[in-house]
Image 1 (cartoon, protein in one colour):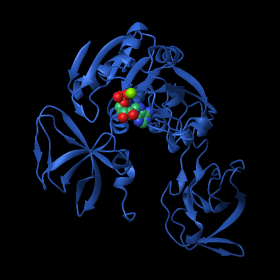
Image 2 (cartoon, rainbow, N blue to C red):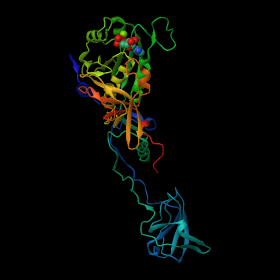
Image 3 (tube, protein in one colour):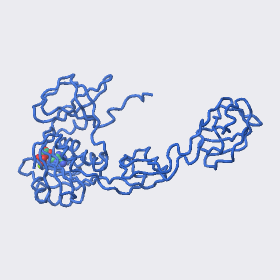
Image 4 (cartoon, rainbow, N blue to C red):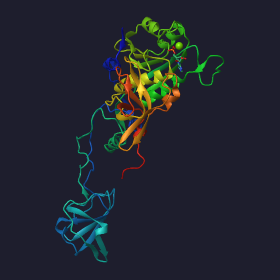
Length: 413
Ligand code: AMP
Ligand code: MG
């Protein structure tokens, strides 16, 4: 087992071990944010006929320049109706948005550009051929690849899926993630803290991170600090795609996660990544087909930050996503930061716009136990491993944790 890896190397090893999960059939109505596992080839033409883009009058090709003369209204075509009878020169059809244009109609003139008379309608403008007509197949032709494999299904893609008549769709499975906490001091939120006990907050923050990454968390519970308790809980989690545990993975006498994983036949790939918070991270796998295992450190911020850097990209890759990493911004430091050389720090920061720039300021106490400063964090500033000082006014890369940070106060319209 390798130890003391650079963060980037650890990430590379993890992503190399991750396979995209197989597909499953999903109701289209439930498929939002899932990743398409098939190419959607259309058996339909959209629009199925040439249709009017406006409420107005359909004109014969001979009448496009007939501005000022009166045309006879010989038919009316509503949306959902058949296209009507062929138009003759001098005739017009009253037509509504979405209605199929009659055969031989060359254009539609907007109602606003006409005047209704007793004996017909007068067009008050010149009209170009094709104006206000949406051609058959303008959007999608029969046999078109309406959506390509690997597309994340956003609202527009779901609309396309519906348009071509699909009510079910093949999507990449969502990773099922067993979450287990370990430690004799841990209780559930409604438990009695008594003396020396604390709530297992990791169960909640890691479950939320799992869900936010599009995966399904399955809470296994809290294991006591004994090899037997851990072994029982890990065994019960082996049929999931991923096992994420927190705590018990450091060098203490009661840190049993690594020996128990080893005993269960897990291949331990590495332990220890040179980052702060979060050094004691173990990564392993149960063969080629069993679950991947992330033994995260127990401190609440270390658990969250290591999840963010190492588990989240793995879950996204499993789910078929191609965008595995957070957006980053280059931010100007609002204050001086210092540290020792050797470990990459991820500094919890608040981000603020200042003109065209973004200014990053520390959320305060950066201890790995201070979860409140993580709750305030809008980004994680990358303080490179070998750097020891970043001066106020320097710039640095910041991973943006929440896209709300980039929201603006007006729409820009
Ligand atoms: P350990 O890795 O077991 O030494 O735990 C490191 C620190 O994280 C200790 O202070 C634990 O109490 C704390 N901790 C461990 N697990 C959790 C958890 N599930 N929720 C909150 N804090 C935890
Ligand atoms: Mg412990």
